[in-house]
Image (spheres, chains in turn blue, purple):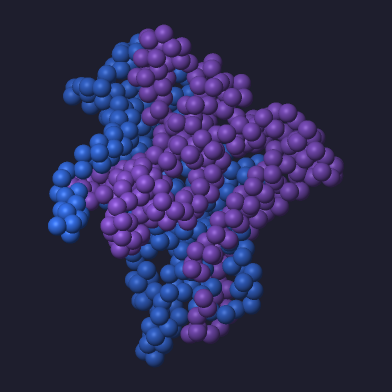
Amino acid sequence: MSEAILRAEAVTPAQRPDWLAHAVLGLGVLLFALPVWLVLAGATQDSGEITRGELSLLPRLDGLAIYARVLTHGTMGTEPVWHMLLVSGGMALAIAGGKIVISILSAYAVVFFRFPLRRTAFWLIFITLMLPVEVRIIPTYAVMSDFGLINSFTGLTVPLIASATATLLFRQVFIAIPDELVEAARMDGAGPLRFLRDILIPVSAANIAALFVILFVYGWNQYLWPLLVATDPGLDTIVIGIVKMIGVETQTDWSAVMATAVLALLPPVLVVALMQRWFVAGMTEGEK
Amino acid sequence: MERRTLFDGWFLPALLVLPQLLLTGFFFLWPAGEAIWWSLTRQDPFGLASVFVGLENFSELFADPLYIDSIVRTAVFCAAVSLLSMSLALLLAVFADHEIRGRAFYRTLLIWPYAIAPAVSAVLWLFILNPQVGLLGRWLNAHGIPWDYHINGGQALLMVILASAWKQVSYNFIFFLAGLQSIPRAVTEAARMDGAKGWHRFRTMTFPLLAPTTFFLLVVNLVYAAFDTFGTIYALTQGGPGKATETLVIKVYRDGVVNLDLGSSSAQSVVLMVGVIALTAIQFRFIGRRTAT
């Protein structure tokens, strides 16, 4: 009798719909979706009406032309949005790609070789973890201007490519590669570079994919760095551009701002959504 | 943690670490060294001559009530952002761990905000809380609650806290959910058999088992709130009204880039460096213990 009750209790929660869970999760989804819905709907409305406080939650299907307008013309005093997207995309790809390449190379060297000052090299890379741009704003600017890198695409990307996080992650992955695999490769006469290209990189593909998502988002979302090193409007990223647009609140073209917001968040959101599987696994294993 | 099988030679590996080391040297170590050097000197406004002044920049900094205010403000801001985003994320993760229909669907819809830039989240919140344009801001004013973060410092601080915490929930959610899923089913079942229910089970079993995740996230969130929110705050308030939302990083930027006070800005950078080093050390000690167990 008591056993039957126990079993019944253990079974029912799974079968009865868990209304509380649906309610909490539904509210959570709304909390994130609502602000984005607001800009999606607002982008199609008239800027004058929005300024008068008549922002509505209902989109207007005839208002989609705003996207064409911001893409080709931007707003008053800004670059066209297509150009900002190009700079942001280039920056995100260069940072993600660059970080992955140099981190694989350095992690490979540190794990599979013994060379003088190996530990020193590792610690020097590790230290960068403790020196985010935010804590060395002025001196970094000075160094950049010594190199003549202010207002250049190189200045925008290259200094952000050094990466302790990615190196640490690949180090972990490479340490876990079984010795037998390395032995086998060597028996087959594979040199160090062939081993790297034909075995190590394919084996780490999932980690590379996960890291790519994290780094793409990191690169796309930069704000302080471009603000510092690029004053030339031709190098405005979309994140910089949208903050410029809201700068003068009294004359803001609100629907253009909203359309730009949608365009600014779409690419990184798509990357995360499409590569979600690798991203979540990679982040919870690696980033710790 | 060392490999047994290795490749020979030192030239190739040296060549392979070189790019990383060059970037680290030029763009991290050198500027950090310059920050330390400048923090010990005083320059004339044109940067032509500098005098070594020892720790004078630091003693001036800590004697400045505005700096102490900024430290306190940053602490309040970081604590509020971390608490808010972590507790909301934990709540969502606990329910997303239930076996309900549409789990994967909910999960995707809770993860994507990770991709939003801090500065863009500021723009989104503007359309909610701006007193003229924002949905909620307008509603508050229409219902006799004066709301304007352009003039009210407390409201400005609240707004940057909300926008910063909102953006960080997804990150915390991903880690809390992974933490919950790593709790062995046998443990959950045993607790259920013992008759532990809902809140009681969470408090006595789930939450203690999540302690390592919670601690890891606490450090990450403090670092996020202290440093990565520059874009959010700068886009919304530029640190104002007055100094109401001027966190330490905003102050470094204002003093260094806007007011060109090299000595003080460098001393502030050095203080922040010490802060990050302390937080990173705590995090890695903790991670060392984690991998050992």
